[in-house]
Image 1 (tube, helix red, strand yellow):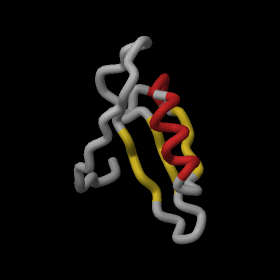
Image 2: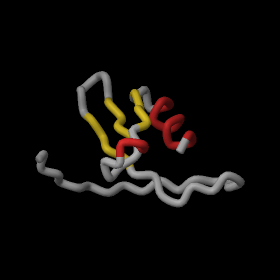
Image 3: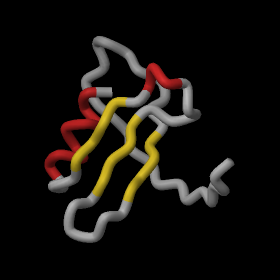
Image 4: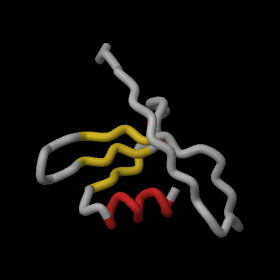
Length: 64
């Protein structure tokens, strides 16, 4: 999870851990320059893993 948070920071985004809220995703990451908000789900966390794989999925979500 921290690896994804750091990756978002490296992209100059502002990630927020929302995993405890049970929203269906783990991180909300905002892009300050555009206001774009990303919802990121982190899967398969292993404490001793040496690598991280990040995939891109586009999902349309309707509020409420």
